[in-house]
Image 1 (tube, rainbow, N blue to C red):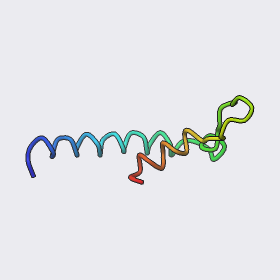
Image 2 (image 1 turned 90 degrees about the horizontal axis):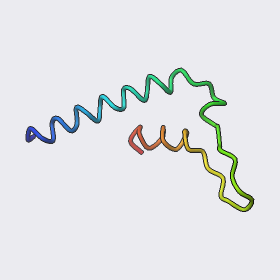
Image 3 (image 1 turned 90 degrees about the vertical axis):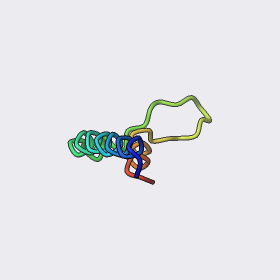
Length: 57
């Protein structure tokens, strides 16, 4: 593995660790938070989506 890729993967693992520790402290209600949206907008769950994508989905 080249040096640049190795350091990128280290930074990615560190970022995941930081997010994991932050999310670990949230209650289920916090993970299910959704912002107020204008009428007709698609509902979304930004915190839940970020957690799933940062976990490698």
